Image (cartoon, rainbow, N blue to C red; front, side):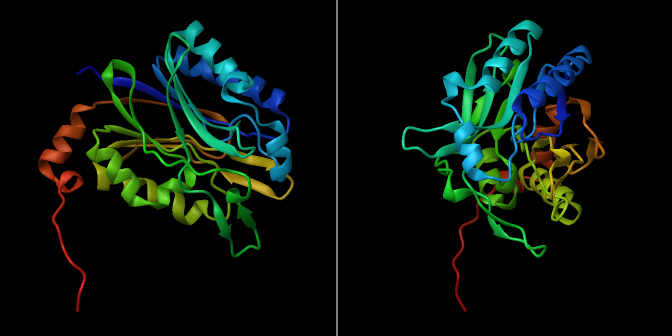
Length: 275
């Protein structure tokens, strides 16, 4: 199988969606010019706001969402696959879904994944987040066909803390797991890379983790450090704390080789809990 050229786009979303989309467009073009056929964007690449009420007011149904419409046009123009890391999609019940969408070269959405594990935390720095107040959690894990038949498992940010989801994706056939994120500067330095490398090793998958970076709004700084990791846990590339494009070529035969050498990702030995 020929190597699969991929890219992670790192960006800084603000509360100005028009500015955010204008900033992301040249980065997508840069990734395509670099040869990437699968280009992945960060979680909430189009809009970040400290107010969940403002997020709810900004959200639109999928078919009307300006970020998804833009990416559809770019995918067709550039003949690439685009992963819309995540956008806030308005649902019929008034809540939102934190939705990742895979868009094919024809501009159509070929797969969608709604974040299952919502970010409900109280951090040591006093930050408190309750995604579940406004977002409806997804209830379906997704493995989709991507470029050249590559099997892509989809996750979003906080999902990375739940190994069983990623193991399920691997056992359903995923060769690549995408983890678009907006990790904060509070948890990122200690947790981000460790969690991603663990998920790659546990699953025998490549992990593509495009991240938010920089100052999104007063009091909110994203960690950055977008990563591409191979099944052995090796970091193939990383970005720093500025917007940019990370390119890599994935040899998907490594997935087969890793699982043949260390079959733990596809091994399920039954056990009981007891004294």
